[in-house]
Image 1 (cartoon, rainbow, N blue to C red):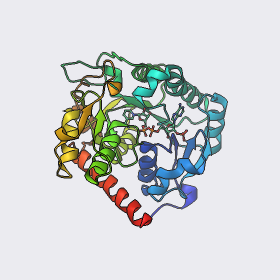
Image 2 (image 1 turned 180 degrees about the vertical axis):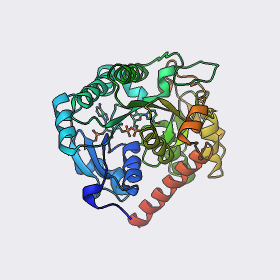
Image 3 (image 1 turned 135 degrees about the horizontal axis):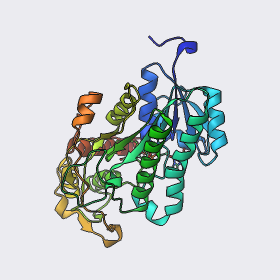
Image 4 (image 1 turned 120 degrees about the vertical axis):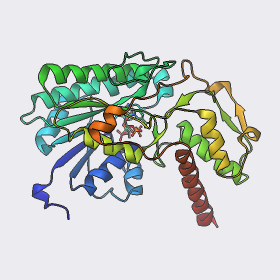
Length: 334
Ligand code: NAP
């Protein structure tokens, strides 16, 4: 049973309309939290993910510009959250190459504004900040931990690395309960279409339905660690439930080639990827090779968290969801 409203703990999620924001909101609501969610523009189109999870009415949505530190401070005073999750970001590496300044502002500068607002508020909440495996760059042979050397190779990774160091500085210098969760790739049906995993799932389903012949992709030899987003938000919440603040890696610990992802997605509809995939130089990114493998001992022993959904199951689930959507669309049109 949920506690009465007056006794409910409050969580503030910056970036609640994104993939992780939606799953985190669902997780926190299920655990009795009052959830306040922020968006730059909380208009109805942005609520698709929350609606899909059936929780749009339960999240209190409010506009917030993270470039405005006094607005953040006013929000903390108004809602008095115990937990704040900073998930808002320009979160695409490809887009960061075109819009480096926006990427830096939305990630590094916004994190500093949040930390300042938390530091100066009457009862500082605990703060989670979303980091990224992109902070470590590519081509590492050793497994990484939160203490590993940072070597980002694109504007997104650089912004995440800067935010990570700012969080550490505030924790050490001001004693704030502020932590970075260093997230490796994680997917779900709420991942937006431009991301390669959704592009693959969508293309596979259209090819299986005879609506498309070929799928154009970049370098299939790149490696990533793909997990399942609804599990990752559980680790985020656990990080803020510890006795002491610390940074953790959140990953499956298994790195796979994009080719393996593609092969599995096609196999799940009984097709051979080699007959349908075309290498397209337009989608090849510089310095995009292999991400490091995550050393997850600390995450497992301290948070008691391990991923349970791995690739190839991730690929199969994305294709199955897209197939169901396409079938529903055909039924509506009939
Ligand atoms: P997402 O789906 O892209 O959602 C991020 C949210 O941030 C958006 O819904 C958007 O909300 C807001 N946003 C977008 N551009 C912004 C900008 N320029 N300035 C300020 N806000 C902006 O991201 P996600 O997949 O949920 O990821 C959550 C966090 O984890 C992000 O910080 C991301 O960088 C990090 N991360 C994700 C992954 C992954 O595989 N998903 C991996 C590593 C790290 P409004 O439009 O409503 O404002």
